[in-house]
Image 1 (spheres, one colour):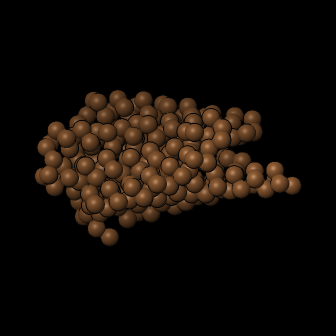
Image 2 (cartoon, helix red, strand yellow):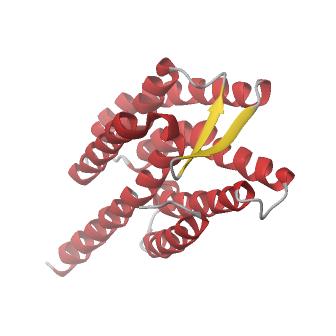
Length: 218
């Protein structure tokens, strides 16, 4: 498949519709952040569509750099915080919440370091084999990648909901696949994969609401 601005815009629109449907199933304030993840991933993909347009010469270098910075800000600077925090918020059990706290600390620490690196070093953005590569001297390390995986996937495996554990497995498999086949474009391709897999979040809320309705009828 050839990735392009069109692919990002269309994919973003489809995932956004799922994200809106997910938010419509929210009944409690603590569920909002987790339910919003598909919509945030959709916006993320649309932002990368503008990065593609910049690389194709259809937008100015200033817009290209701005959209690239926005893409990196969410992918590397915010997601390590949002993922563990959103899982922590929806967990009803105190034991699961306590277990997720260390991942929140790891995510916040990593995000602060990455935000520093994104401001301290220039990020190179270029196209390679139908993918976008984002290279930053401060974040392009295996150690950063490993900690990133721990912060974003680890909390899902500790969830009290089996469906979210499945989401963690799917995300982890996607990470390994991307790192094996196209490690140089990890940030771009894993975020695309995570956006697609985030559709499973809708499944989580659909199942929860169905179970709630069933219990009320009994």
